[in-house]
Each structure stands twice: as C-alpha cells, then as structure tokens.
Image (cartoon, rainbow over all chains, first blue to last red; front, side):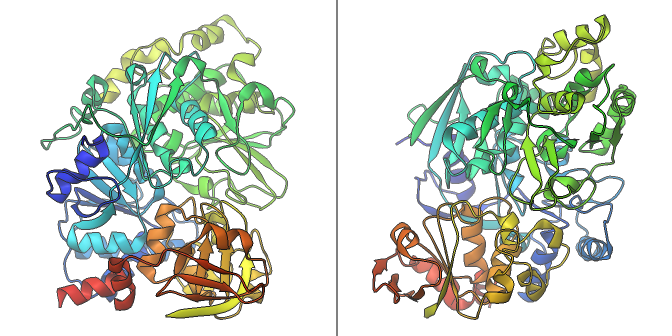
Length: 455
Length: 163
C-alpha cells in the first residue's frame, strides 16, 4: 500500500521500510525548536529529569521572539533562562535581540529547514515548514525538553487529506486567502490529527511565501502538518540557504488519502475570517459595514517581504482612514532591512503606520498593539479566538496583507479591488502586482530586487 | 486510578487562549496560571473550581497554541479529568505528557450537564453520571500511554529508561 509524502518522511526517520496511518513510531529529528514562552518550561523538564547534555547542539534552535524585546520583567527572566541554557550547552542556533526574527519566518530564511527533514517545535505554527517539503509539527514543552536530550520523539502516523489545487490566483489574492478558504470549507477541526497534503497543477502557481502561509495555518484546521511537493520553486528558495545535503520525498502514486478536497485557485477571493474562529470565512467584499480601529500586518503567517510588498502596493500614495492605527511588523531582521531599502517602510510611515522591529507581540495579545474593549482589528495573523489580541470583548478579523491594508485605508473591512484609484502611479502598481512570476505578491517594479533577496 | 467530582461544562472548540490567555504566559508557576484558567469565558471558574472537579466539553477541546501552560493550568486548578467529544492533537499530547487525565467520549460530552456529579474509572474507561444515573464507555488509554502515566509522565518514563 502506498504512502503519503508525510508517511514516507516519517518512515525514513523511524528507520522503517513503511508505516501506515495510526501506527506509533519513534522518529529521529533533524531540528528541535523552542521560543521564549515554551523553552523555559522545556528547560525545567530537561533539568528535572537530570539530563546533562543535549543530543546535538547544531540541531536545536531557540528563538526569542514572542515577548521580545522583553515586554516586562517576567518576560526578561524567561529569556534569561533560555540564554543561560544556550550558553551552557553552546547551542549553535540561539537567536536573541538583534539577530532574532519570528521563528517560522527566520528558520526557513536561515536555511535551518530542508526538504525531507523532520522537525518538531514547541509552537503550534511549526507546521509552516511543510512549505519546503519537510515534515514539521508543533508539540508541547515536555516533548521539546525530551527531544533536546534524545533527538527523537514519538508520533502517531497521520492519515491525510489531499488538497488538489488547480487554476491560477486572481489579482490581489494570496496564499492567506487560499488557506482561509480551505479552513472555511473543512472547519477548524476538519483535518484533526491528519496531514494536509497539497498537490495538483495549482501548486506551481504558488510562490514559496504563499506556501509558507498556507502550511502555517494548517494547524487552524486541526492538522498535524501541511506539506507541499518539492519543485523548482522550492529548490530555488533552498539554494544558497541550505548547505547540507537533503533529499526530496514524493508521495507514492498509490498513496491512500482519507478524502480529496478540490480548490480552483481562480475561484478564491480575498477572504476575511470573522470572530471568533478561523473557519468563519467571508469574501472581503461583504465587510463594508464593519468599522475597524486597527490593522496589524506581520506575524509568522504574513510578515515576509512579499507580504510587506503587497501591503505597500495598496498603501502607496494612500493614507489610513482617520483614527485607524496601523502596525507593521517585518518578521526578520533581513525583511526589516529590505523593507527600508525598498522604500516600503517609507510608504507605511507616509500612510500613517508605525513599523516595529520583529516580534510576535500583538498576534497573541502579548504587547505592541493590544485591543481595548469593543475594538476591532483586521490582522494578517492566524487566530481570532476570544481575547486573542486583548480584551475579551475585542474582535479580530483575519485577512491577507493586501486586504488588511485596504481595510486600513477605508476604515472598514474592504477588498483591495474596491479601493478608489488615487493616481496613475498607484494604479499601475496595483494593477501589475500579481504579474511578476514566482513571487506573486511582489510589485513588478521590484522584481529585480526580489531576486537579489533570494540569494 | 479513579476520579469523582462536580462538572464544569463548556462547548465546542475551547481554545488554549481561553484556557490560559497569552497575557499570563510570562510565568510558568502552575498556581498563578490556575488563578487565570478559563477566565475569558467563565470568569468565576478559578474561584468556584474544587479539587477533583471534572471538566466536560464538546469537540476539538484545546485547539490553538501548543502552550503546555494550558493543561498545566487546568491540572493546577484541581481538575481531575477532562472529558470531551474530541481533543486537538497538541493538547492531547501535552495533557498526557504532564499527567492530566483526559477521555474522549462524544456520548458523555453530549449528555452530562453542568453541575452534575460524575465519576470516572480510568482502567476501564467507564464514566458514570451519578446525578442522572447514566453510564458511558470511553476508550481507555492504550498500554504505552498507561505506562507513561504510571511512571509519572513522559520525563519520568524517560528517566526510568535512562536508569
């Protein structure tokens, strides 16, 4: 019986010729990840169990990103504990203020994840790296602590849902809209315990950043992981980032899937998930009567350079509506610097936004953009649960960077295509920003610069 | 291994952000976490929960973040068992790893009412609603998980293996 892509990666890491859905396996790991919220609990467990060494100091990544730069004394104390642990064991990939970025943007950028690898992270959005054809999934701190010591963890082999992608994305539509549409179709537990395996001719139409966004939110459908096949686009992204050898894995032709979900990318519209579940998907055209107070553009879901480019294309020559607060958070130092170099930061500030250094801050209601009672935010983040970004009576609407930016300009939920034209220059940028090939969200004018960013 | 207590009942998709809001994640102290447990959907929970009480919920309990603080907060609140129609996978793993008893049982989840007195036999998976007199059968833990819980969780079982 054939295996899915996920099952083949797990079989390889378990040293087994084959595995089947439901089987319990002990798997070797290529990378173990933690952040400043989850690592302290893992360290406590690691130390309480009496471990004296880590399995491989080059295969552990500790990223201080959630409440960093530290928001208060408790957050500072948690980072101090992580820092001391990293020093004690000489952890190679320890990222603190200055080098740190949001973990799920930083690790692919720095070449810490390669196709075919198996990764766990004490953060639910660890499933992001499936975009590169890796198996990656979120776990808790105890699992992380044990894995730092042993380099292994146990898994129940998941069954899979095949998501067959066809067609091409329309203007203004991005990976965020695809995943919000999919979650709207199958629900927040539609893929519980399962893999979401993306396939079909539509895959080639999605940039690596679209794929990262899609896999990032696989967990919001309850999935164990999301995963894309490895193709030319993957290889181009990984080239120059990953030095070590890696092997792409393909699903068997006779792999067994629980079911198939069909998505024609051409049917996907700019999508907004209303409170308080990511499955509450609506077209961005429908939200004209929902007034907002704030937009946030950033996070592990949408804080990459093409995300900022898409927002900048909307905001160029425009300004936030009166009274709207705009917060832009580039996900990594490289993205932050490039955003300045390409003029996006100027565009954001001219539009009335503030631009922060990398942090997860507002996404999980930590700091840097907390909502008061009754306030509404259109956010490019990943969760809109009760109280997620602040007061329990505040509301979060999940959307793409283009839709968030358009909503900020209008002062209510808005589709980017519905914005009034401003001038020929702005109109040109808007009209062409899907036409630049691989990086679909990049304005055409900047496509040359984008190539250099890839290297 | 058994449990008995008063039921606190919740609906579907109880997420980790309401179990323990992220604004309290700058601490790892179980008691402090427990003092804010469930407060965003049930502000009285931290003050009304008693040792041994049982939490009953609908589908996809514990969805969202991987924060182990969520099962830690529930356990430190004194809750002896969570019964749900289904659990989100990371929460399921975390609960077992830290030794919070959980049982998947859609029938019990649907029938048991808030405030009922419920007892659980973990060896057989039998759930008894002593208020209504109904009994339900949940799948008991598989042997490898029972072994892990008997040894005191994942870390304790690893330590035992090491020694």
